[in-house]
Picture 1 (cartoon, rainbow, N blue to C red):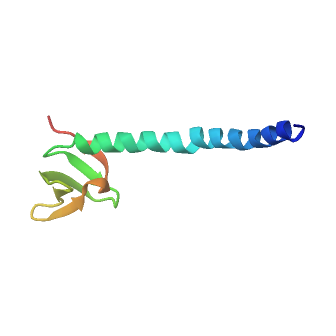
Picture 2: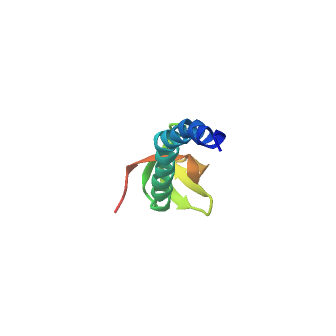
Picture 3: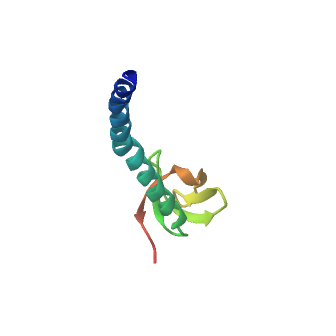
Length: 92
């Protein structure tokens, strides 16, 4: 019976480290992922976006897993939906 309280006290620092790790790393990352997913689902045609690679363009077509964006008058590229970093302007 004497060894039991010592074993519990040895796990308290590990539990504390996990709680700190959760609040400093895991929770903010999940919040950021949810915000990014909401951004992607709310995008529509003619929104001006910037990709994670820094390409600026306007959405001209929305497919199941990709967007087709116009980057110049005659230049269109198809990108993965997760490649959108942020929206410059949303059209009404």
